[in-house]
Length: 187
Image 1 (cartoon, rainbow, N blue to C red):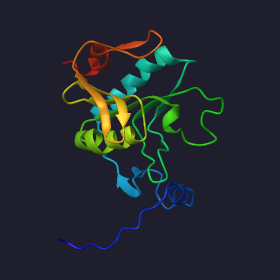
Image 2: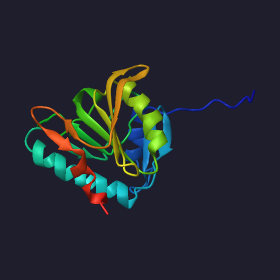
Image 3: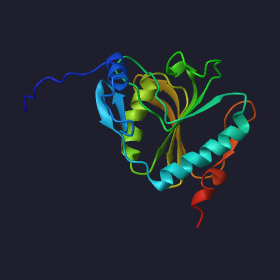
C-alpha cells in the first residue's frame, strides 16, 4: 500500500478569499469539490450551443417565475462550490447578491456533458444527491440523451431515467420536448 502525504483541503470561505484576493485568473475554469480545486473541462461548441438553446427554451417558460443561472457557483457545504452549467433557481428579490444559492434554492440543476460525462455521472451526481438537490439533469450531447435524477440521498439518486425522445414535465404545466432540445444537432 502506498503511503501518501496528507492532503490540505480548503474550505468554501478560504476559496472565496482566494478569489477575492486575485489568486486565480478571471478566465481560469476551476471549482471547489470536496475541499479540492478541480480544473473544469474546456467548453466545446456542442456544449455551449446546447447551453444557449436550453437558456432560450427555459427563459420562454420561466420569465418572472424563476431565475435561470448559467455557470454560476452553488454553495453545497463548507468544502464544495461547484459551478453547474445551468440552474433554475427560486425567485429572490436580490438575485442572490446576499450569497450564492444553496441546494434548497434549486428547482432544477443541469449539467451538459460532451467530454465530462463520467465526471458529471459519478462525482457530480453523488455530490448533488448528498446535498439533496431534488432534480438533477445530465444531458449527453454526443448521445442526444437526457438522464433525469430524482430522489436524492446520501448514497446517490434513487430514481434515474434516461430519455432520448419525448416530453419532460417540469412544473406548473411547463414542459420541454427533447426533440426541441436537440434540434440544434440535427443534420
